[in-house]
Length: 149
Image 1 (spheres, rainbow, N blue to C red):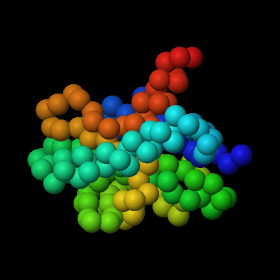
Image 2: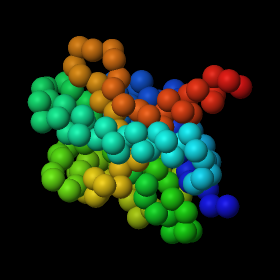
Image 3: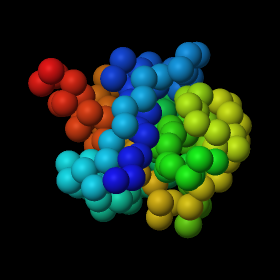
Image 4: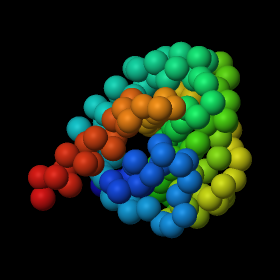
């Protein structure tokens, strides 16, 4: 059974949206590619992606936008990595890698990358002056699991 690595922002989720910087290695959780809850979260993120685009188009200084992208690893796996969004085009999102990859993905923390928007596995944003985080569907699944322990 193939597993996917999800960089979890259990403690870093608020830091991610507060500062858009991760200064250390974030916790990583292995999740099976067949996990129904995670697959439902990814499907919801994809379905609701236009909400992120609309919010980004109306962005103001201090708003923070992030997407999670499944980078292939050199070992044949996948690691989902957060990007701080710098631009959104019709078919792609550009941003900077916001957490240090655990497995080799050909990029490092802070690298500028452009990824196809159709493959984004999650997204979130926080508007300046707000404490509300919108999105973060995979984070919610993992936080719920952590809280049940």
